[in-house]
Length: 266
Ligand code: IPD
Ligand code: CA
Ligand code: CA
Ligand code: CA
Figure 1 (tube, rainbow, N blue to C red):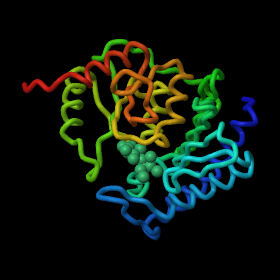
Figure 2: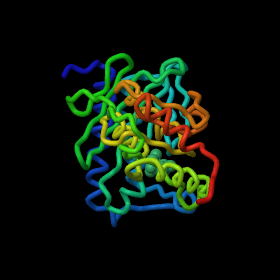
Figure 3: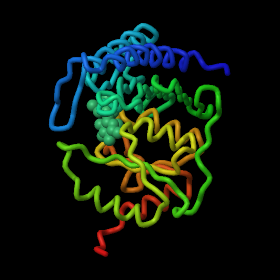
Figure 4: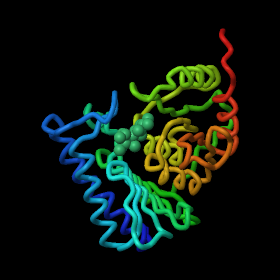
């Protein structure tokens, strides 16, 4: 498959960071780990991977701005372009030896996401999408699942970690969804959750309290795989308010309705 020069740059950065993560994953017990807050960890591996992505992308496209999880915002001369980077999405999985984690890189041009790459090095699965060019895993074109009855679906979700709060809201959402679908999954990496929806492995996904770097690349993947995404209000402010509901056209709409149903004890 021929990739554009832009995607090649992003893939190279993601794979190089992924190789660093793979090495650290093999020696996870020796890594320095610190806590940003209750249940919220960051390790040397996150920082090393971020340094690699930052160096690769800065070299290939000097002047572009950055939004990265660990460094925050780095303003460049070119305010039209911004990289949105999560160097290790799924740190908790990573630190527990669970091979569900990824590097996620998106490029925003004039406020619009135009390219996205998500790489899970443990499974060697590379997801790529460019606006208008479709979504791929490795060389295979992706399409969201076609199921249209909620009762047939497997839906992914994210659960708020210890320090995040809103546990009660989540339990109401979960209870509503569990009552309507075949099964619910919690992978522990929002970028992979979205990639799995794009790949048709899960029929839908919802989570709140996310950050732009968790979802920017995944949102494009889903759209380019023929899927639909909105925030919890049905709008398109996912990057700003950090809530996401995703699926094919029918399931996305149905899931949004179910997730937002008021609590009815039973
Ligand atoms: C986390 C993962 C997780 C989601 C959390 C994120 P991190 O990212 O995406 O699935 O539930 O909200 O913070 O911290 O591992 O990059
Ligand atoms: Ca984190
Ligand atoms: Ca993340
Ligand atoms: Ca992260």
